[in-house]
Image (tube, rainbow, N blue to C red; front, side, top):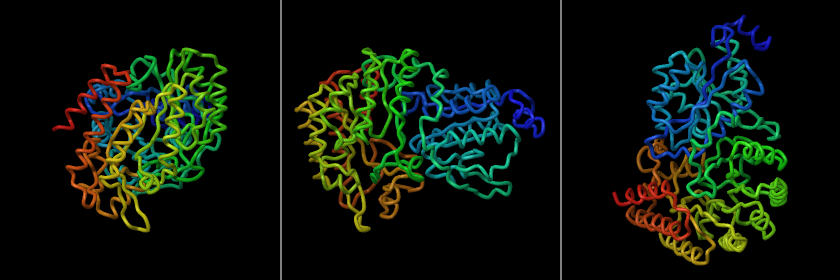
Length: 492
């Protein structure tokens, strides 16, 4: 234990009440038995663990509890560990499970400090503090914020939180307090790698579609320079720059670490790897020099920045599948929602990738909505029909091999969330819409569009998706059963 920490604990007592390391649990929501898929370890939490290891060494003891447990198993694990700090983030889609989990853990760990963060708490911190038994909400990027919180709790069980940027909490009088936003980390290379030693990769199934059985994801950039109406990016869009990237050298260093741990397929996690074509090419060239012929990749691309040279290099590094957020095959819709891309550019991209031998996974969304001069606009049934027909055409050209379809859904942190509230589009309580998120149920009522029409179009899209995967190959038993569950849900 460092002398500084020992002095703080001698003076203030600290959470632990003695000189032992502070016990911190970074926990995912338990998803076993739910419709949420625990495919990957939580990168956000593992980044927090890496930062704590660098900043505090042996002054803290950190454990990571993954998602593939039942709630009962989760609570029992927490009880056995008996942490001083329980930290868990969550998305809007998982908010109901998160509330149930926090309440269950709080019941058995009443003296533990509860900290949360992530997409949903960042978008709605006051709502979370009202409904969840948490002490602090982290807002935005978490590494430096969480480190400062831990330093504060090392020194006192009732620390002064007023000077810690990037948090919300309730003061001694119960008043809601939101401190100033924390500046983003300029140089992502300065952030310690996720603590991969806390992970058993065989516990995580990874993507439904993959070449290798031991797979992981890694973060190569943070944020996106664009502002699509449906996209919820509250963590990265609190302030600018909206996009930051790691250096190719830093990324390759982590790739080597993952490879040494047995990982043979990596999803390079980025909203669009080719936000800067020159940077993407340099990254591919650096990966190629690693010389791992048995290592495969997947990544996301932006359609209007796909070049033949980039396709060639992606194929050379065994990047066998690209994910493209296409959303709609109608230029009016793409312009309205802020995609800043055209159908012609999308077609050129998928054909170029196919020519290079790379599969394309297309993300499609039905019934988009946006505003123009304050007036509500939305994707019409005729435009949805066009998207469905276009997808068939691209499949027969072998330009798109896989895809997913879902309704466009307002999520906290997205422009669409406010648009839907202004125009009273929500089915049910707008303040609870995220609790009813279901890819098979439309959350919005669009004027003049019968729900039966929306349902019929979604059924066609999902049946098309399943047909594509059967014809293109790669249908694992895990994917088969999930596809069957989805199919059955459509006809309930």
